[in-house]
Length: 142
Image (cartoon, rainbow, N blue to C red; front, top):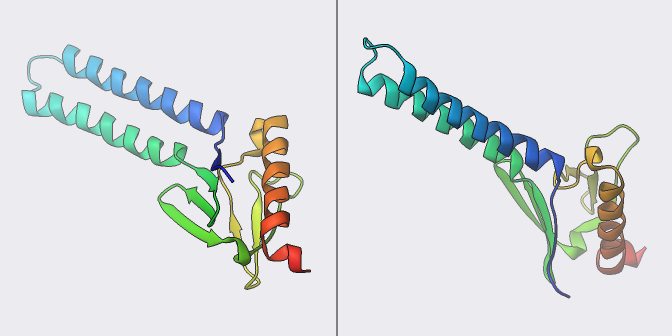
């Protein structure tokens, strides 16, 4: 099996566009501030813009990757690795923003790498991932 990765489209575009706008705005603001603002104040403005961009990057980095060993789910700062045997299935309830993995231990885990806001693209990704889990996961034994 080759590695397959799913990423949300809109949930990546919006934060990165916002990050660029914030950084450029803070740079412009640092340049046009009146004389009482020192160089340190101006650098601080740009640093705040970079910090905001960093938070937006964390939100945009969500993804899910399938390979021979299992599934890697990146949701913001958290990364979870699951072996195929740990996975029972994946579902996305009506109106849910992202699907949920059903795990063999009875728990569930969000998969923010597939976003309902992507419409048909999300449905395709969900079907592909569900087929992989059915083929390789614990569900094949039931």
